[in-house]
Amino acid sequence: MMIVGGLALLLFIVTYMVGKNLSAYNNTKRRIRDLQSRRAELQKDNQSSKRKKAKAKKEEENIELIQKIVNKLNLVQENKVSEISDFLISAGYSSKNAIIKYTFAQFVCAFGFMALSLIFVDIDPSNLTFKGFLKLLIPFAAVYVGFSMPKILAVNNRSKRYKEVQKGLPDALDLMMICTEAGLTLSAALDRVSKELGKAYPILAEEIALTSIEIGFLPEKRKALENLSKRIALPEIRALTSILIQTEKYGTPVSQALRVLSKEFRTQRMLRAEQKAARLPAIMTVPMILFILPTMFIIVISPAAIGIMAK
Image (tube, rainbow, N blue to C red):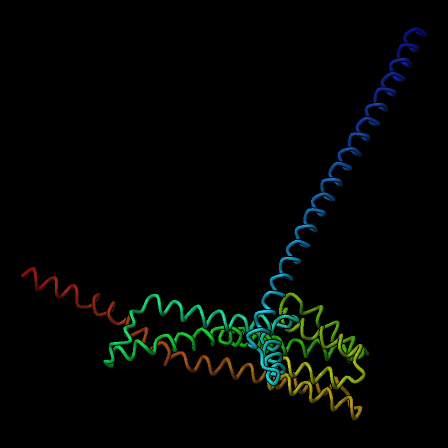
């Protein structure tokens, strides 16, 4: 019995030592694998950082070249810089090089459209007929269209931004009202609202966050609110900024003013939806005439026509 017990104890000790060594080996192997994975991640981040730096450097070189061309050709007039800047900011292009890129795009599009018109249109200056005169006007029209193309795209982008802001403004006012009633300051309320609306209305959240930052470092809150109404030239935003400026000036409760304004904005949104619904019958008339009525006539008349042809 003692021999059996000793063998069992020895077997237990051997099993324990082997298991311990295997566990240590597995832990070491796992640590090595983690280190290798971490090293691969660091190498990947390093390569990504190098690519980003190279891309930023190349973009900076391109911007310098574009700026030289713009300055040499005097494409930007000094008296219109402020107007163009406000227009581009309202369209969502707020980078420091937005004006240079915009004016260069106008120049390139105008030149490119003119070149395409000269390539594809057979213009004969010696032909002074009415048709030949119209062909002579095509390059000038192409220059105008090309020059206007960046502005058209920017206006379209601005319209999309304004629609999203109009859609999310009532919800933003409700959140601001809740935050101000909870005792938050205007800057803290705007910061909180921007975080809550980040996924649903990113453009509105970005503008509100920028306004909150400006309130923090500008000497007057009024200037930050005026900048908001300048970036988004909507009647709703102007009404909101005016109310916030008045409440700041006279010390009236912000939450009460926001409640009234939110109700008004929701009513306006409902009226816009009703207007769209009221326009649907007139809009659907042409598609019905072109696509639905011919199909109905074919379905109704076809059996009779087939019967007549069979007789």
